[in-house]
Length: 248
Image 1 (tube, rainbow, N blue to C red):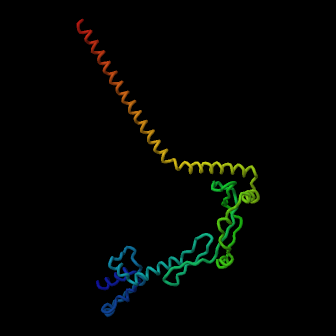
Image 2: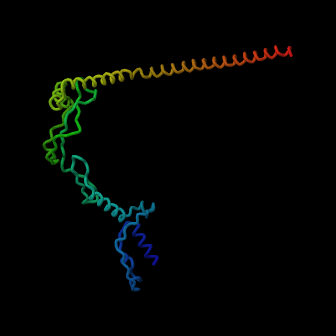
Image 3: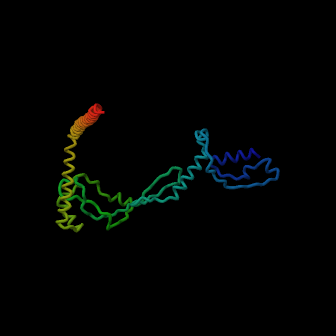
C-alpha cells in the first residue's frame, strides 16, 4: 500500500490531477478493493526539489502554463482608451489591440514658465468630446507625426484660444501671464547662479570657520574672566581673615 501512496504523492507534487483507481492496479484490484478519488488538486504546501526544478518536468510546466492561460483568459483589459484582447490559444501569450478611444479636453491657461513669451497653455480635467475608432481605421487615416515647429503655438494663437475657447478676459490673461513671467525670471536667476554656487559654498564655509574662531575666543575670554573673578574673591577673603586674626 505504501508503494501506491508514494506514487500518488509523486503525481500530486508534479502538479497532476489523478484518479486513485488508476493507481490501484494489479494486486489491489485482484483483491477486490475498489477505491476511486478523482480530481485531486495540487497541494499548495508542496514544494519541488532543486533536482526536480532543474529537470524541468514537462507535466509540471504544462500544468503551470495551463493555469497561466486560464488566469489570462479570465482577466479583461483595464487600459483606458484601448481595447485589448489576450490570445491564449497557444502556449505563448500575446496581446492585440482592437480600438482607440480619443478624447478632446478643454484648454486653459497654464503655469509652465518654459514658454518664450506670453501665456502658456494646458488642458483641463474635463473633456467635451469622445470617440472610439477601430485601430486599423485609425492607423490608415492617422496623419504624419508633426515636427517641433509644427507643434509650437505662437503668442497670438495661444492668446486667441484662451479668449475664445477658455472664455478668459484680457485682464485675467494679463494677470496669469505676470505670474508666469515672475517664475521665468526666477528660473533664469537660478540658472545664472549655478556657476557661482561652488564659490558661494566655499565662502559660507570660510564664514563659518571665522565665526567658530570668534566664538572660541569669546568663550576663552569669558572663562578667563571667571577665573580672575574667583581668584580676586579668594584673595579678598584671605585678606579679611588676616585682618581679623591679630585682633583675636
